[in-house]
Length: 269
Image (cartoon, rainbow, N blue to C red; front, side, top):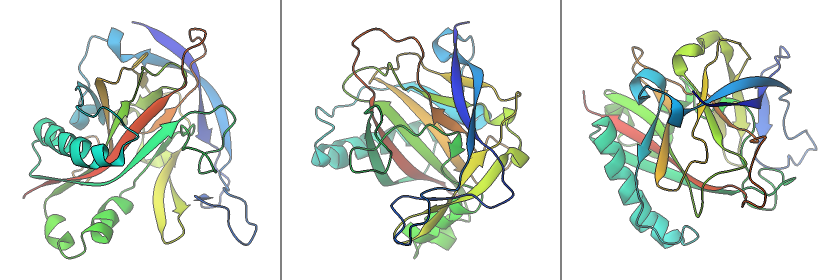
């Protein structure tokens, strides 16, 4: 098997509930109270592994899929073509009855640029999960209030469909941990403050038991599916993940560009 040694940033518990803002707080509060420490860990290249990772067993999966979008800077193509492609793909992979895509994010790495700053969104370089046991169902209530109680009677998943755009990812790939290697006690509920709401995410405490994987030089025709939440308790529910800086990259390669779709995936009772 092939692997790389990467520095992955984990939260350092302080005894206080972690809080991060997506904007500059008007009262001068710090943007985040999260303290992190890097850990040098082996991240296995999925291409070289002799097993198939699945959403239910591991919390993530890698799927070959060629998009018909020709320009990911075109908002119309994303919403008209890419959303429909993603809905069909997720139904095919999960067997879901309904897929609701609630947002997308484009990222373009600029070394030294702050995420949620004035420029494009940057790779997130802290081990985290975007939704929690609380905020997964809450997103259904927030986004589909008239249908939420009926939808929540069935199985609900929050799944991210993550794809490189324009070229492979060389410098800042996405690493994901096997869900079964991370204990519930290592998932730290944290506030993520938006101008109009407060979301809840998990930061993650370090353990040497975590098993990490990535797709080396992941191509635009390869999709990484990440599970943020699952209402079922007998499957992988949360997939911790983080971007990391690849230590050995070819000279002159372009910086990472990627798109992610966050989706609610519904299964009837």
